[in-house]
Length: 107
Image (cartoon, rainbow, N blue to C red; front, top):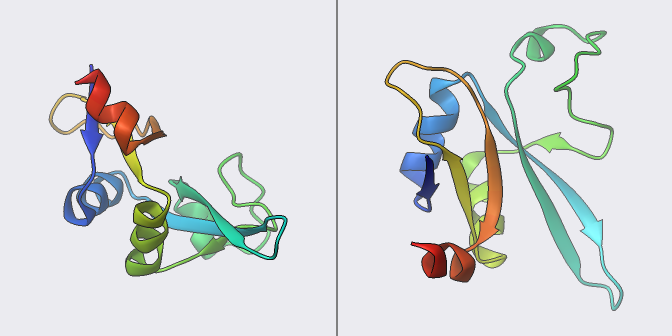
């Protein structure tokens, strides 16, 4: 069953419990505005090996960012994180983003 996370502390705790980090890419929009493409990466080996080409390695457009910048972008886009409501101690990292309005309408 899915669980909606909207607060920084709970998102950070869920992500870090699975060895994850926040990543973000700046995507230019028409009119000069920027939108941030958000993600989480869970491949810790990539943090220690420059040549690692694992499947969860951020692409050239993604950068590691601090939690405050990532959460500010999440709030600015009015998004929440939807995760698997997994068993205690499970490290499976399945997630998706959803608009806050959509999440509130589905609860």
